[in-house]
Length: 365
Image (cartoon, rainbow, N blue to C red; front, side, top):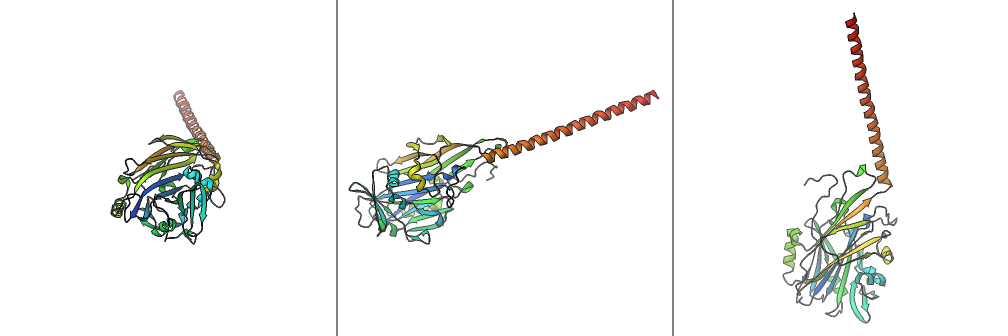
């Protein structure tokens, strides 16, 4: 497809999450949480020296009655390398972070072996958070496998990880996994697309359009290979998704101008504790919007999609300098063109005057 300069390349694609189970899954349910952090949307924010701003997606999986589950698969419609994936679950050892994510009054207890974090609401266990094993700075493949699959990436939370965090857990209790995935930027980004006006060089400031296109388990935009794999692996039991929650955080100077569905709530993001939660830190002001879809009639959530359109005013020293240079060059070219035209007309007038003079002299002679 040919794309004009200033327009994004369309990369509409759905991500997917499903379980491979063996046994009775009637009491097994899963919540999926997706947080898209648009950190790179503020071009004035430089981050920390060792960690520049980068957009990332966090995936949270809250599983109740995990015993029948052999594996949890996550399909991402983008090429992601292993070093771009981190364990965000370890951050839930901080009470302020755990309470901010789950909006519950929680206490955090870290257990070294097996490595996990227990979140308790009083004497009641809210959930157990898995701590992934690391090897050479990356998450170990025995707990999280990765393969390139159908123009995207397939992540799998393996049985070893599920068994580790669910050791001696009761059927009515929950386990939780949380992964942070740093996404490709620019036209390769699977979720954020930017449209920059073609005449931006002729303005001291301009409106840039950004839109977030998030799709989950949407069959018409899933690759056929992924759809076939889901059907084959759910043969022995399909784990219903009871809730899909999608949250996006973006700089406050970006204005939300359209949303395909009504948001559940929104707020200004607190600088503390989230500035330490994000490796690069966060800009001085960020806004959070939250959407969710809950299962009805016990059938589970089949799919979810959210389209968010943002308007961002871009104006800084670099843009202003570029505008002044272009304005100066146009002014210079205009003056040169005016001088050239004036000289041409002056030359024509002189030539005509000389011609008339010569004609008059000839007639007098």
